Image 1: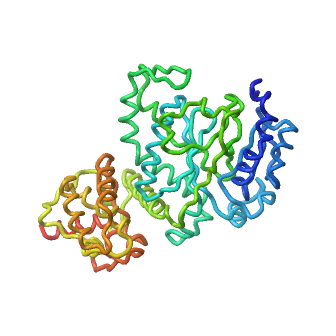
Image 2: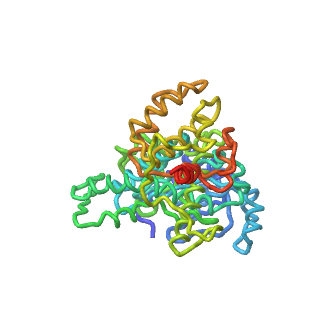
Image 3: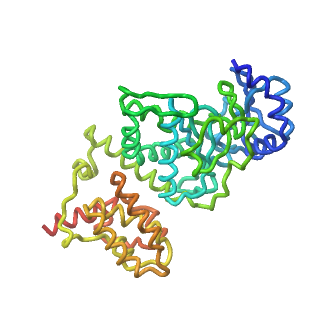
Length: 428
């Protein structure tokens, strides 16, 4: 049941033309469903005009919720449709990461770490909004993702790929998340007028409370529209900048004081390509490890070789695969993706941070034009503050930057690391 405060401001707030326009602009081609206190309106539904918002409010609506998916005609979709029919109707989808926790302070930590992780993968245009309660909604526009990956149409891979990316990002930031929540675990945390003392709370439990909501990544699932009110708090789901997260207070979302800003960022085409490819490679490797632990055997009848243990190879005797050798000769295009490959390849071979810096600096001198030193330093520093991740598998990623020239050994491996490991065994 909506509280009395929200009931008293509904008409006045939703009468604002700027609020109506931003909700309407964001919701174009989306399924939009009004909420009436505790219950939702009929589905499917959408907004035809900004003025529809106030009309719904006059009929008792308290908030508005929309889909991550973009549809050719939202009114034509139904619960009776099979996946193939929904894929046909879907025009695309945005990546929506729902960060919600019992404690706003935890949500702030997670939001900042996820944003850092996205930027590490060259995703710079990220929409950020307060959920209206104790969390944040981060959005990466569908335009940022490639139309195809691994031979599949991106628009048909919802919710599978969105779920994989969310899982990957959570895994990517988990070590840092544990560290930061551990540092808070014995402190008193103040957020607005609320006071949280976590005391005996287990860090693992705290992490579960702040993890991206994977349930939200499902077909036709709805999330609160930007600038929609929250029934329990009577606060607005306002848009904020990443630099405002640290000092954000719930009172900043007072609906009588908010200034409307655009939620959907102007993304560059394909800027999230690296994120998608890396997430898919990570998921593939993760599922293969699970199969191996269950006794899965490869084509040669031997259990798959994984990288659970440290790889110990004399750095003077390392035999690099053709793709890495090609990268090290210097590039004109694809240097940022190549940098990502090199850092993770060298880290898995136990090169120290200083050794990686020296290798990368030597490589960058051969690039035309060179990468900015500040960018390189930031990427190396970030990588060494987080757990190791493998370089991408031997697929389209390397072909895209023109360094895939496979030899006979390449036919037997799936990742540049396999090439080096197998080569070292033969030469031993």
